[in-house]
Image 1 (cartoon, one colour):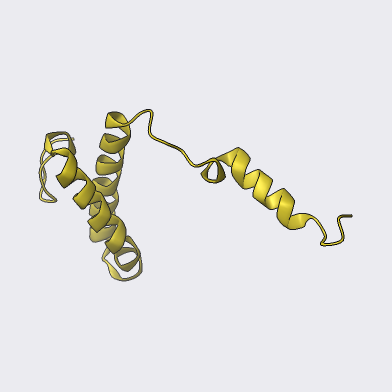
Image 2 (cartoon, helix red, strand yellow):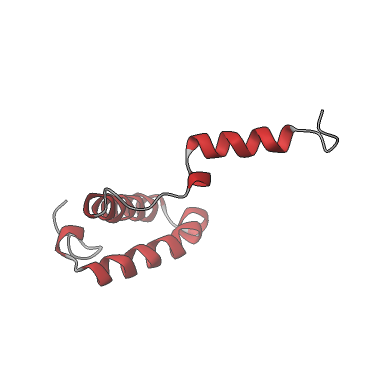
Length: 87
């Protein structure tokens, strides 16, 4: 993505700045969804996607918590459905 009003291209950010931008955009997401204009939500979504894609590009082998995967979520759901008496 090219530079835009939301800041420099994510590819141009040094690692610390990329992480700070990600933290900030995730922190403001809910408020933008609930109270932002349609244009603000579109802009926020585009920037968030740009930042997240850049992070994943830089860290393709990042640590993944088993509970945050589909199989881990299914295991949690199965465990929650089991009755306390084990039946």
